[in-house]
Picture (cartoon, rainbow, N blue to C red):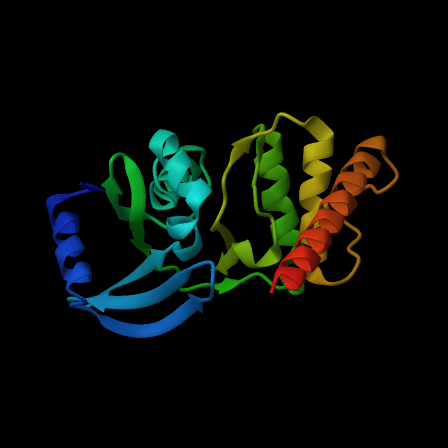
Length: 223
């Protein structure tokens, strides 16, 4: 069973063109084990075409899709949530998913193209301001690494943002700044590192890194 959600009849026609590969590839934006993201041209219009390869194929993700749908559906809804809450981000055009007995086995997302560039350390003040704005409205970004903030015309656009309700208070906010700092590959002085919230978040961050190293070592031995 196939499901398509889009904004207009014109967008609906994109599905068949994409499935038939009737598009021009402008460039690969990302292509690894986790996802394939390419900039495409259809009838003179630019779109970002994203296939969440890992989450389309992982057994657990397929099982949970019975309840929450595909990764592409969730990302489409996240882009809508970004706009509804007054932030800037890509415009979601459509998502497509294919299910067998209610389990999603394939999906993709099409969104508008942002011509800006991923934020760098020179844009840190803009990123800090946007992240604090997200926190002030009771949300967490969900993946606050530097490259998930796009700078266009000196404004910040959010990509790969989950906009999750913050259930963890100041510790949740501190964790996002720790994650942002790690993506900078150097210490940044834009938040207070002497608070209890920071120390709790740092302890959790260290524990998760340890778990990650253990899993990596186990997978290495299994090979």
